[in-house]
Length: 314
Image 1 (cartoon, rainbow, N blue to C red):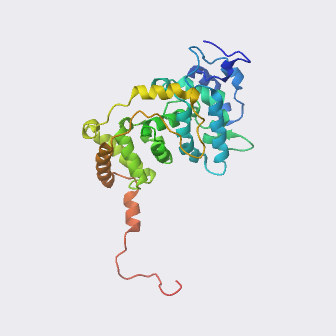
Image 2: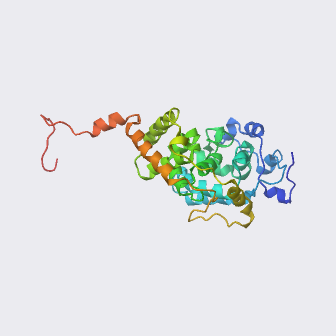
Image 3: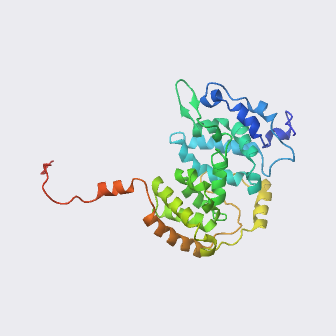
């Protein structure tokens, strides 16, 4: 393990903070806001910087994105920042899926680079000036729950080649991030794009509808192989690597428009259309908790004797 020396370029690098170290630090007092988290300088002493920096792995661009997200969405719910931050985090942190599977990277970002952002995004105000984060997994946890990891993977799985537009649509729906993201279904790119299409066309809108469709689509995949129903060409690994290697010449992620991701191949439109049609059929029969009650309350009442008074002004 190599530690950063003050005044060196390594101070600016993104390292890997072991989960064992992170969990020791994340005491109940720290999570509740009663105790301060150890400063980044102290935590960096336990971080691993061996093997050099992660490609594109300077911490400052990530820190600046977090600052902008907190500024831009300070008058809104912090959840609104997910759709803005996810594509820009993915564009800025140019890594492979294998590198993204290393939890130490995400622990480092959450605890050494932007712990205040994690508290802002996931914390809740309590008495005094405390802001409590109820779950340690937001700092150091599974890929689909950790503050930064979930956004990077959402961008990776829902982008259409260089187009981050589908990522914005997916990340505006918290049920996509909280439930759908962790299902193997979205590893199939046409399926991921078809789900986004249904969100965009408002065939599926509410959280209950998203969850109902996702569960039914996942269950259907056990008997229907989506790769056969809607084929997907392999992504171009060379184009992806060229995009990662070009980080030194890349401009910073634009704040007011979407950046361009790796041009490693778009999803076949015919495959998307096939699954959109299939998912629309599933959406029509997907079990939605409370749907029957809602439908009954909105159904026209039969005409008959009523004790309610009617008339002008009533």
